[in-house]
Length: 364
Image 1 (cartoon, rainbow, N blue to C red):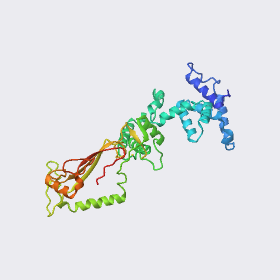
Image 2: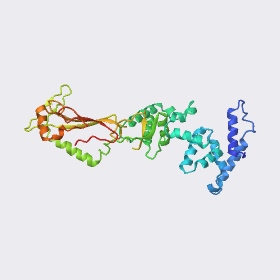
Image 3: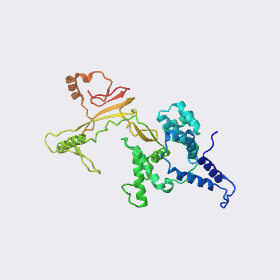
Image 4: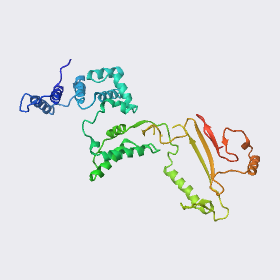
């Protein structure tokens, strides 16, 4: 077994003092003062040495020593997972990774892989289950619990939005703004984040959020492009310029009613609504709170699609023909009487369809 280095020996001395049941006489010179002086001398001498050649000077024992030092403040599970995913990310083979982990005193590859999988799959409670017996030292949230509550609410609201634009950086910026408002000082332009992005990611996991694949894409993405906005504005303005020709509803919330067109040759606005229900469940990944997505899409998956034509007229909201009008329509459009998979409402263009895996309702 290799001889312990000075750093490890010093750590063992500190741990013995910390957990000793006897009182240490500070006036006794037999403590670790000589060791402190020796380490300080070595540290000063290092500044005069040449730059360390890591390829030649760093050994597996050095890594093991640093790993053991870290165990004083961090659970070995966390450190093992950190080392394992780092080695695998750099392309180190499983067997080679296992050899390194064993030599530095970490979990073997099989165990590290299990806990890495728990962490990456979002099962954060399982990952930290044996190390949540209490906070050993106060952290940011101990001093600012009201900011934590606001941050959780902010996260919930952003994760509930349809567009998957929320990131841990957004949370870090929100916490920083709330912090400066709480303590009443102005933030410097070059100041660092109050809470790092990495800490915010772990906060999200502690709060129950998960970052995973998001299989839904809102088909309305891109509707706020400049060209789309301009076209939409022109379309709406064309209706507003002719509003006196349409049947409209008054703005009185107490007694709304129909307003009859004041110009000759009135027009009836016809709306088309197409809705999909119970569809499959969009950014490749997003933060989730709970098991449900905030919206559904028309992607693959069984669902029911309803196509409605709605009219703005006092006679009723749904567009329909009376029997005489429908008979005349059949004479001109014979295909209206042909069998179809669509379930039409009698004498209307409104229909529904049970959509299969790869089908889509077209309005041809």
